[in-house]
Length: 153
Figure 1: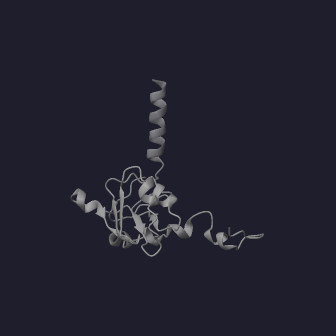
Figure 2: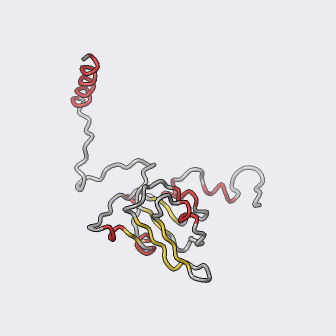
Figure 3: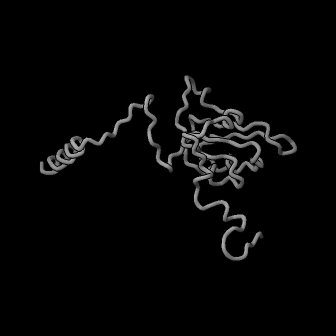
């Protein structure tokens, strides 16, 4: 009984302090955590078609079709199956796939949630936030702008 009264007191304290938690969504855009994982963005120019993202995906969300010369013909991502684990982004050696903070996507059927490489390329950044620009560690340090000698091997 005392535990219930304590929890009710905590609830009332937060309810009466005047701070709002609810956002009127379509009119106001919510603040998204910097660690939020949303829709993928794909760069065909960066991709080397190594298929590591396809191999590491636990749900078989990513399907890549290549030709005989190992050039990418198709890059398909089924957003409806994705669990946003970020393994595809972490394993990509050239940062060709990034998870944006964009959560605004819809579909009437399951087929509407299957994106090809052109659709992924045109995914907008959420509030113009580029995750590569804000990612730690700083990528500029990789090209030898830090202290000491750089070992490129």
